[in-house]
Length: 320
Ligand code: GLY
Figure (cartoon, rainbow, N blue to C red):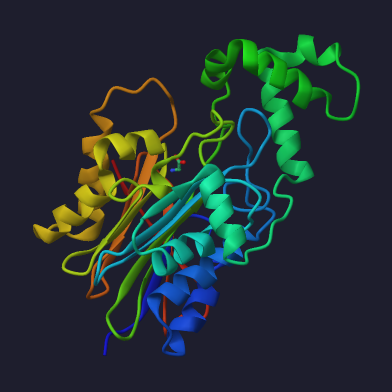
């Protein structure tokens, strides 16, 4: 018997108690991660996952998510999924019901979700739309916004401008200030199985169709029961280029403690040239329950629950 534990990135506190309940009842790490992540995805106050997530540059919410199991390294993910509020569950369905594949994106992912009985919902909330409009206006769409009538003025104007100057606009639509990012949840169950789950609305105001590290094995998510699991939040292009989640697990396999493995994995990614300002963060868990995290800035934390916890406990991340 293993002592169950569940850890998560900033804002996972909305879901970790639900995940811990699953683990305490003897449930699987996969069930715990899915249940916990669904809570986060349904949290309208969170603008980085699920319903209420920030949209792409055209004002459409596109979600990425993945789950990976440590014993088999089975992986399921969806990328740029539109219209389905719980991408973590669709990713799980890819893992369990489509074993010939690991990842579905865009229209194919939505078709699979529909065929597997998932229900659609409006994902763009008024608050997320307002944040997007504010960014469009700040990025210089104000002039064209004035010339278009109607409730969706900024959307239409932004759309026009987007088509004429798309790459330049995406360059200027940087994430807003303050901590932003994906949610990572890693669970270890009583049977010793580990699962890493990642869910996100992705880089705020991204180019439509952009898929980030959350859907990509080895980048934002990696789980290998021989050494542990790791996951990333923040600028996914860096962890995709650095293979960061897998790098961290390999470092743990080589004997590094989780926090130091995360710090070294981020340090490796930080050597890559990158002109965008968003940082990368990571967290990791070993099969014997040790955990740690790292970030590029002071004050970043991750949350932990064990069977004795009444609520998530916040732990500081190591600083790069
Ligand atoms: N880490 C989330 C993303 O880049 O989409």
